[in-house]
Image 1 (cartoon, helix red, strand yellow):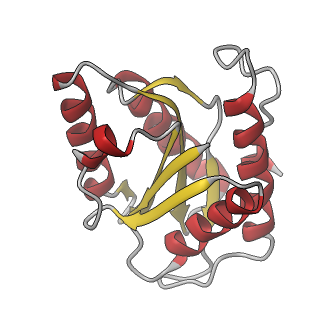
Image 2 (tube, rainbow, N blue to C red):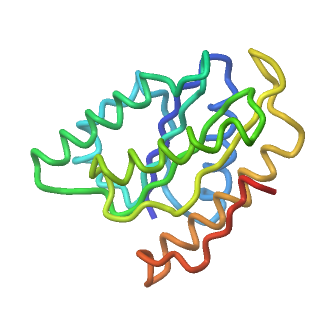
Length: 174
């Protein structure tokens, strides 16, 4: 499986989550590209033809980063112009908020992935990656949850019944 992971990490926390995903997938023999949203032009999605795209966004000042949302919009435009989509997608958020204050933002980011037409099928959950301060570090257990989430997403993307995603588990609530 070929995967592209983009993140909007300012202090390295989103990059650490993306690297945890990459470790799981590369261990399974997958080809993975990890890049900051400013370093991966969405037009490359067409040529790279990934099976899965992961967008990691940061919540800053109580809002999901504009850079990640813009990247998704540009990716959708590039793919639409060329009449194609990525088969599978998922999202994660890095943030310093309590889970009850972040759920709506994560759900909206996931819905944005569904509605902007980047992917044919979007994983039915997203990963919450909490940081303990403005610059981090990530909360205890976050990278372990990220690895479990990556395993579940990979299993889902490789399964034959991706629209239903029956194997999906809400790992953000663990």
